[in-house]
Image 1 (cartoon, helix red, strand yellow):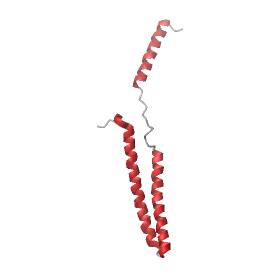
Image 2: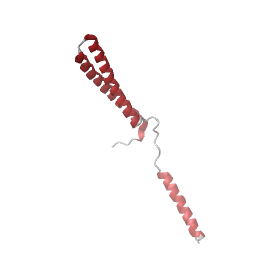
Image 3: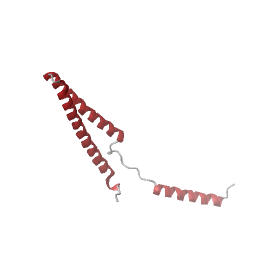
Image 4: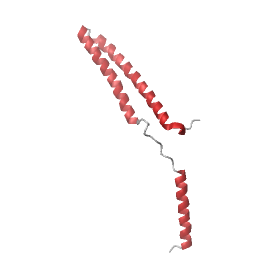
Length: 110
């Protein structure tokens, strides 16, 4: 059997521990405005592949039209790749800015 005095001390100790845990618990961050990693990665891959695909399509179409098979295909594939990388970098910059705004003043630098 537990002594009533010991039980009361244990109850007070449990209450103090619970209060300290609540006070020191990490605050949940608001991530509703942050861009998810997988979503961002898929978006970037799709933008890059779309740029290359559109460039290949235009190049192949022009080569077929003019009868100069590899010239426009290679040229527009490279231009499509460059456009895809440019779009990818723009998306990454926008996502970084959006995540920094979502973190707000909580971020401690230094």
